[in-house]
Length: 369
Image (cartoon, rainbow, N blue to C red; front, top):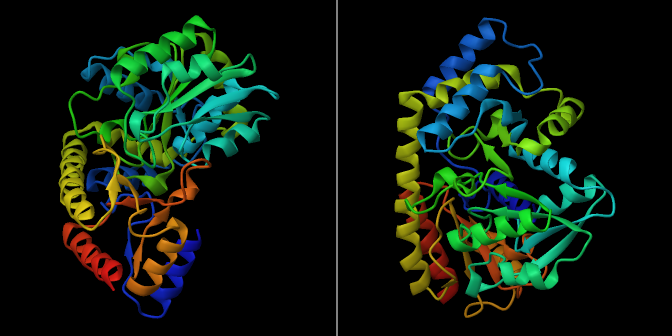
């Protein structure tokens, strides 16, 4: 937020700021989705819906999963107010006061706040480059205690873009079932993967909560629409919680999202996914040539997590000086980690290629001055 504040101040002074700090795609929402929203508003689709979400949208998601070879019945799908609503709902369903949630460090910074909101605490699992910043089964077996009742995984993760390796994902899923623990898998970026080998955790098991979102793949961040796939054992309880926590997701946004699964929107989404892969491939060699250390090639999303240890001693100071002197905004790694050295930063490639090249040129001049 400090970087955003400085960026806004500089822009108000006429400075050209290149925003690589916020985790929001720069692509527009598909025109077909916007048209469907306008039609829904004109038709008066502005009232409360079923707390689970409208049935056609849940059916559409079920069919979308089926097209990927995954059997997810619509009664296990809960429409939520963004992925944040899905995460909060999953933690509320699994975490009692005094429980702890096993969570990788680094992690999405809102996750521990969701846990605190329902009276729980976070048991941080330190990760590093060797495991692509994902936890491992051996760590869980070594560190988990009786009060650690839930494990959350991000597949792929923010801030790293790294997915959980398939073998580890399977082992950790089986461990949760074997030890009677809950599993939450954040798959917000799963459809923005750059390899065919990255598959949903639902191909391994149906016993976990899976969080999805229309924000990233379908470029609907401000529409506040997501979903939660609920394991069979928790459907009724989780749906009851949803009624009390947010009544329903925005009705017109639900109607608009039906267009996401039609040809035009799917074509746009795939085109944007491929464009993000090109941006990743553009950035990585150039960043490495400037002295940035990249742990591993991101599997998906639109982030590169880099170490600036060979360039600066403090990532937060590096980010502050970079934006003040060049107008390039990136995010310090301390937003995501309590244990990593303070030299990590996150770069979001949410700008067109020409702007990314301009950002790289400004960064190179800053580093070499």
